[in-house]
Length: 184
Image (cartoon, rainbow, N blue to C red; front, top):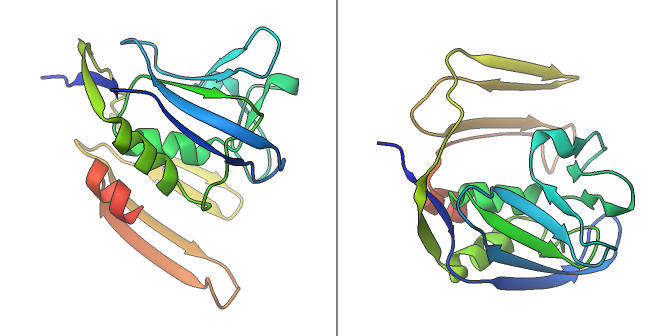
């Protein structure tokens, strides 16, 4: 049976300063109707532009994930999106009054905590997920990304930097909302 779509039960707000642009931002997660997906709304911009978190809106940028272009773009959304995915939410509206979510502690932790505090709500629509039928491999410079067919999300991640405080690190996770919140 396909799982039902999920959203948050109530709105929750975080405030802080963005990492790259240094602009103060108030971010509010809000429940969204079934099938709406994940959408960002720039409340500080004329016409309050809506930018869905889909690959068609991704813009090539260095050291951050950017959605949209020009003055309406939203920068450094990766920790917000990771928290939503880690919480297994399908439909969430994210309102921002600035161009970039607050950095908080530099991880997804504050966003996970906010989403957990908002609670979750099961919706009447069924979730639809991409199903891999064969392995996928992407190489970008020294980085290699692989995805294999599976019934669950298992991650095997490694990183290697010449700096002695980082060096080589590796981890493996069978990802659930609890594991994501505690470990990732």
